[in-house]
Length: 491
Image (cartoon, rainbow, N blue to C red; front, side, top):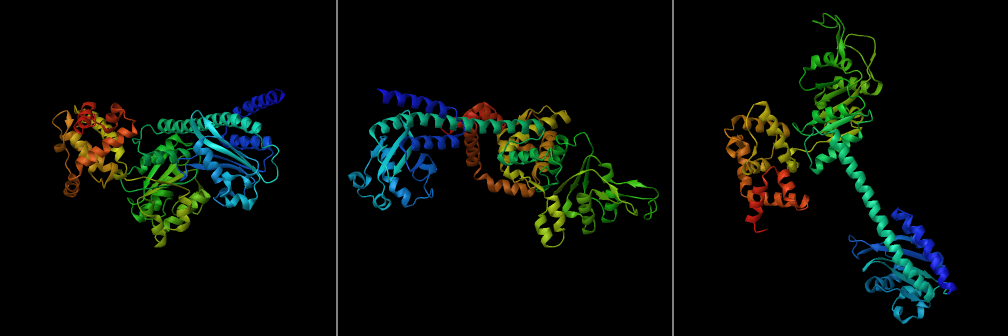
């Protein structure tokens, strides 16, 4: 009775201890420590269920083993652990080398293991793992009473481990959702929910409170200036000037003067001093679009501006300072430009402190219905057209197009369709694709039905089977969606 009372008190203290630990890794270490201390075991490990592991289980915590790899050390315990995991019953032996259950285990003999105890971690009817302990010296503490004690302890530990894992997952999910809400709040005017677009916004969010240079890459029409403005308007320089310069739009002989300004008489036609765009942007952000087209002669001066915050007006001998943030963008592969010496390597590295790559629209198919809805609504308001949506067949045309001009081309096509539409809904014939687009659409038309079904089914899965939300995301009516599902015999 006294021994039972001691065990009860010990279990009470142990339960209170393990239930107070919310970090799964710390808890597992504590569970192993308690089990080894109670039995004076020399070695031990904890194994948990793992659906990604070939065996279904993975060693997550160990003590006095040399490696987690499948080696002779773990081979010695494999038959014991397998038996416990399959049967759900604990195993105890105080003379493993002569125990007939392990007579085929060469590794037990080789390592001269004397005593073994292995208990299941049981959560309800499910075996979630096992705790394995052994000793090559002592058998004194490896008793039936100890086995009963540890079996009860194993059930308590399994519940504590699962609770800690759930809390850990909830905390991670909470952080993820919080970040997602923050991103949505900050960039609420930027349309897109695809995974690739979310990653763009997540990186943009991380650079808001730092003044590091940012290099935005991507094809023409992907929205590089939109992202640059969003970073400025939500960052530490919001409310200050945002000055955009298209490096490819200015003649080479004028771009230096436009950027840095000039003094009177510095060249023919310079009848007065003039501020440059760098000076106009002072305190705010200078957005250098198409930086890959900047002449080599100016690249060194931009590098100095970034590194020293200094520049000179054309014709001036005095340096000026500029407190600005530089955000650059290009549709070129600057690494290739560096290799061919068309772009300075040192400038590339100074600009590319934070790189943001914008995916082309053809890689953001999930965003097309959202973008279409947004552009239709805006165009309908601007052009006073009573358009309330896009016919599903027309939406399919938008989904299969390759959009070489990306979002810019997409927006133009939507606006043109809104202007040409004679009804309340945009139809296929309202969209005027050029000859190359028509060719691409004809090639895709063979698999249009399959594409439609694949898109709907994947969106349904993403929305956990919610048809209303699926219809909203696809930009179609719930009635049309239900008709399609019924047509496939999925009702």
